[in-house]
Amino acid sequence: RLRVLSGIQPTADSFHLGNYCGALRNWVDMQDTHDAFYFIADLHAITIDHDPKLLIQRRRVAAAQLLAIGVDPQKSTLFVQSQVSAHPMLSWVLECHTGFGEAARMTQFKDKSAKNERTTVGLFTYPVLQAADILLYDAEAVPVGEDQRQHLELVRDLAHRFNTSYGQTFVTPNAHIVKATGVIHDLADPTKKMSKSGSSPQGIIDLLDESNRIRKKIKSAVTDTGREIAYDTELKPGVSNLLTIYATLSGTSIVELEERYEGKGYGDFKKDLAEVVADFCAPIAQRTREYLDDPATLDKILLGGAEKANTVASATLSRVYDRVGFGEPV
Ligand code: AQP
Picture 1 (cartoon, rainbow, N blue to C red):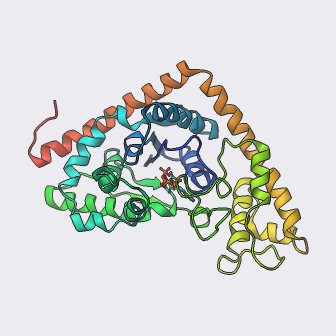
Picture 2: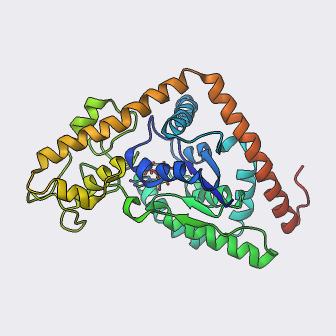
Picture 3: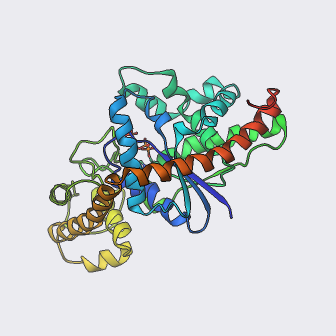
């Protein structure tokens, strides 16, 4: 089986619909066809200001949510990044093979450093740690949203560079980005992506949002001029975004939805979508609460995952240490 790997940061109280449609949905699908490794990226989470008490809580909620959406610990290895020490160790080696200018070109760093008062070196080297995350597991496929495409290109370049200098060491990974759902947009400003840090509360739907809150947000989502429910990302970015969400969560095609709502206005469409999203999120919130009520099971899953991840990651790190002239890690 080919290996798949992906991670998500525990930087908010809940994952949002963009995370789900862009990435997490594919995590769940791919665990049936791949040898899957999924992790909670807490090392990445401290690249911006953070509160330690909140981080440890959010890590638990993140794990519970991943299980609630269908990540199955019988099929996938689910772990916390900071519990596998090979990640920062490989990251250092890769940092020493990354050009400063190359790292400085990353648009996510430019965006986030412009938004944050305090820009850390960690935020700058974030994509290199991400390269370590992926390369440690010989991952062939990395399911992510469109915003990660540039980082994945860097990972491929680093793998190729290292292999060329030291001999075949890393598998070169491919980004697995589903075009139709690669970017879910902000409901209040469909020109922007839905994002934990960048969206207003009206712009983002959290998987753990309460049903009435979800209904209100969908009903107040920005739509476009005209009345027609049609998919056109240029002329109707708001409606197109809502159609994408509707299609993804209901399993109905966009063409079918366009036919269903022909001659009907935005009101009917949004009313139905509000129910679809509320019905989708409610059981996830319920299952998340159940997992959180059983911390022993949660810890057991994460520790088991970390053990398995450590075995794979430390074998790769040994290979790398040997190649660069460090000998075996102790
Ligand atoms: N709007 C989105 N549409 C599609 N995919 C998305 N992803 C994030 N936003 C969207 C994908 O979700 C995965 C996990 O993301 P992350 O939390 O680790 O980091 P991120 O990409 O930085 O997510 P956010 O919400 O945008 O957080 P902030 O605001 O902190 O930057 C990734 O695969 C990502 O592509």
